Each structure stands twice: as structure tokens, then as C-alpha cells.
Image (tube, rainbow, N blue to C red):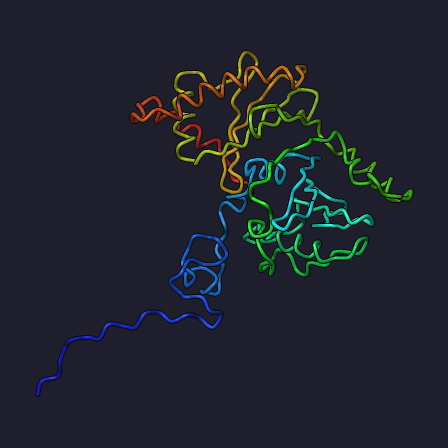
Length: 312
């Protein structure tokens, strides 16, 4: 009797030893199937680690651009936390003697999921006694072991940034000694004057020297859509912020694009709220356009891409 050539269909993929179906979305939040992500033994980078958090563009700005700033946060179970751009010594987190928890977004080392790095530090701080050192275990490198920020924070809470002229907030409410004050003075010497333009999202003015200032604007739009809009404005010679300004290029950081403009250094930050507001209106109109890019706009887009770098 001839052997049947009909092949039996494989059974549905069984759950892994950890209880995760290989075909299910990976619990890390990467959007990939588990078998192609942490189930493969290699965790690919999370392109937008702050996606889903209130104020995502500001998270990127505090991580990469802003020297001294704080934000009040609230955990999902109602505990208050202060987010800081950076903490003394680059510490990931600390708990003051009065129980106040501070979380630093600028870490000395990072894994391929910054949200999990910060979540690991925050989870350890939430368990640490008041005034005790925070020990989150290894952070960065091969990967952090704790939860992601999206699992710990109240995702409905507002995200209100306060930019500081220096790191004086490090020692607020503490009885710091001479060594701490000396370290604070040294850190303050490296702070660049920075201001947040009101009502414009994550638009930060900075003056790095006596010759030029910059506007660095972390945009929330998807990259391709934003580039098309900027190309339309560039081709129409509407991408600057007025006389004496120049579109310098853009960063790509944590999945978002950060356009940068060169500005005259002698004008204060308040002078740029109006021009930036006018640009925002032009950009929104360009973002709403649906017709294909013209030849001039495609050339402008290629030029924009050539001046875009990725921060890692």
C-alpha cells in the first residue's frame, strides 16, 4: 500500500518555559513576537523607549539635550517621584532622608531599552528605606532586570517640566557638607543656559557660547511624515525662523526627530516664542498636505536627510 504524502500540520506553538507563547507579542513592549525578541536570546533595541508615556518628547529632551530640569511624576499606586535630568555622580536614583525619591534620566550606561533601565532604578528606589542607598543591581549593558516605566507610572498624570539655571535642586532640603557644595559648584560650571519656550511642546532654547544660540525642538510626529512636511517648507523657503536664523539640521533620538535652528546669541529666549509659534502654524499646514512631493520638495527632503544624525 502506497504511503500517504499528506503531511501533518504542526501543532500550535507551545508556551515557552517562562509561560510566553513564542508567537505572542514580547512582554518587553518591542512590538515583535517573543520568538524573534527576548525568546531568541537577543533583545533588539526598543526604538521609542518613552512611547506611551505622557510628555514623550520632553523625556527625549531631558535625556539628551537639557542639562538641568525636574518634573514631578506619580506612580500608578499614587507615590510621588521627582524626575531629574541628571543626579549627582550620574546616579540612577536616590532616596532622601525625608523619603523623597529622585530618578535621573541621564544614566552612565544604558541597555537597548532605556525605559526598562529607568524602571529598574525606580522600582529599587520605591523599595529603599528613606536615606538609604538605592541598589537597582546591574543597569544597562546586557539588559536591566526590572519593569519598564510604562508599568510603574501613572500614564494619565500631567508632565510639567521646570528648567533650572543650575543643579541647586540637588541639595534642596538636605544638610549637605562642604564636599557636596564643592561638587555642586563644579557641576554648575558646565550648565549651558537653557529655556523652555512656552506653549510649544518640547521646544528648548540653548546658548552654548557667545556667538550663537540654538532652538532644539523634539517633535512628536512620525519621522517620515515630519520629513515630508519639512521638505515642503524647505522648498518654499519657509523653514527658517526669520532673519538671522538658519535651519541647521536634525538629531534622531529615541525614535523622534529633533530639528535644530541656529539663532543670534544676543537675542533672549523670549524673542523666539513668536517666530516659533508662526513656524508651528506653517508646519501643521504642511503636515496636513496629502499630495505627492514635487521634484523640488524631493530634493529638499534629500538635503534634510543628509543633515540628520542619530544620537546613540
